[in-house]
Structures are given as C-alpha cells and as structure tokens.
Image 1 (cartoon, helix red, strand yellow):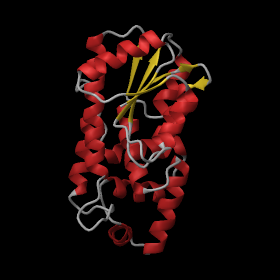
Image 2: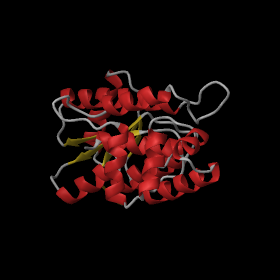
Image 3: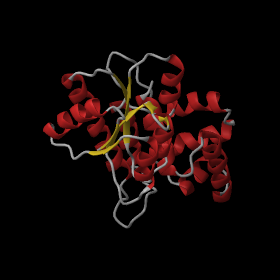
Image 4: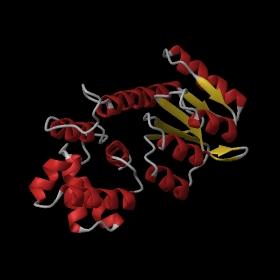
Amino acid sequence: MLLVEDEQAVGDAIADCLEQLGCEVASSSDLGSATARARNPEDIFDVAIVDIELPDGNGLELVEALRSRAQPCVTLVLTGHEEVEWARKAAALGVAGFLRKPVSARKLSSAVAKAIERSREMREWLQPREGGSSDYGEDAKIVAEALVADLGGPRSRPVRTAKEQVRALSLEFGLTARQTEALERVSEGHRDRQIAEDMGVSYSRVRQLLAAGFGKLGVKSRNDFIRFLVERQGSM
C-alpha cells in the first residue's frame, strides 16, 4: 500500500493503523518521490492513500499517474478542506473514496477494507485467462456486469449495468451510435470477431470503431476501458 502524506504526525498515525490491519506500507512525503514509485513497474500497490495538498504539487497528479499503471491501484484521497472543484476532479479520475483529516481509525479501516476488496476484484477481472489472452469470452458478460454492480456503492442507490453506463458515456464524451454499440458489446465481454458478426461489419471496421471510442474516452485498450467503467461506477 502506498501512503502519501507530508505531515509526519498524520502520516505516522495512519501508517501505524494500516500496519495494525496487516498492510505493508510504503510511505512518501512529497509528490516527486511518490510519482517515481508510481512509475516504477517493480512497485505494485493494491491501494494508495494520497493527500491532495503536497509541498511540491497537487496529489491529483499522482492519482492520474497511478490510474495509468498496467496494474490496477485503487486510490483514496486525504484532505483537510472541503473544496468542490478538486472533489469533482478526483471523482473524474476514479477515486474510490475521500477521507477528511483528522480521520478516525474506524473510518480509515472501513475505507481501506473496501478499497482492498475493490482492488482484488479488479485484478481478478483483468487477469488473463489460460493461454494468456486478455480478450475474454462469453462468460465475461456475467462477470463484467456483476463486477460493475458490486462496486456501485450503497445498495440504496441505483446501479447502472455496464451497457447502461456505456450509453451514459456516449452522451458525455460524444460517441457515435456505432462506437457506442461496439463499446457496449466490449463491456459485455464479446470478442472483436463476435462484435463484427453481430453488427454486420468487418473485423477491421470494429477495430476502427473501438480505437475511435477508446480515444474519446482517453483509454488505450480493453483492460483500460473496463477499469474506466469500474472507476466511473465507483465514483457515482
């Protein structure tokens, strides 16, 4: 687990609590050293707890760096203030939760437990099947929608299915009808050739539609796209 907090007393208290929970903690007190860790492929973190206000920059820069990693990392943010603008930016980056300082041990433990569970589920979904392929078959349809539903937050709040979420994204990001249709099928676990057959277009046309759709969403691959859906659902 990565902990980024510039106030030593606060950082030490949080680290002690995390270690009592059985977490292995790597601590940084500034944006520069934390970003270096985030960009090091040998450092793998299930969860990161990041202070928004750091002496050498904004913690959201680190959140963005962690989001671009090949290995998923669920992020919680720490703050001593209530600012709507940064909260919106953090939510757009898929932050899993917000912790206002001073944070109690109970709230910290609860937030970390949920974040660890989310990280585990994301890794299970992104792990290649036998044969090394990350392009999942029909069984992924059930897994994908269950995963997104499970990460939707309190059960009293309506949860969108993966297909419904893609339709909402089409309005927000200006996806065409065909791009939306192709991405809906990806969210249901369909392979490119199956999508081509279902849509009545060529395989290369499906690849073009997905590349254009991924580009508008700011993702580069199927794995990134699924992560994006999970993160967006978790921040709703």
